[in-house]
Length: 200
Image (cartoon, rainbow, N blue to C red; front, side, top):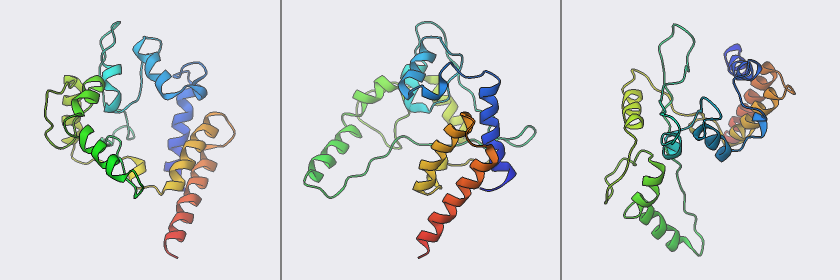
């Protein structure tokens, strides 16, 4: 990660803020607040996954569209990031049986209860009952999935300590406390430390 390409990712994120493509107080905007700002027409664009489709695509004030973000450099083939919905794990606790029953319910008969509000993409299985999908989100997912090459999200390959660090590094770069080059070097050190720990 200690490369010019990695530093350039941090630099481009910082450039968005420097050019005014962010809302006021953007460093303190919460997740739900960001969705609300878009749905109310107070910001022009939002970067979210399909889990937020129900709130982002159903604004009463305007029609929303979707597009593949410019992941790659100009002139290069588009390699879209293919993510997934939030996963769950059930630990061996005194409530393990109940937790498994709950998961079986929300990914089975209870799935439409939460999916119809969110209008996200159903998991790779059929669920009972009608589900509501936004047509643009469904078409978007199909087009992204048909790309010649795709990549998974960063959290599918970065070690856990690096994932935690990358969020702090992005904040520090945007706040001007860290340079993009320093952020890339720190991320690289975190990945290497995790790899060394795994190899012991």
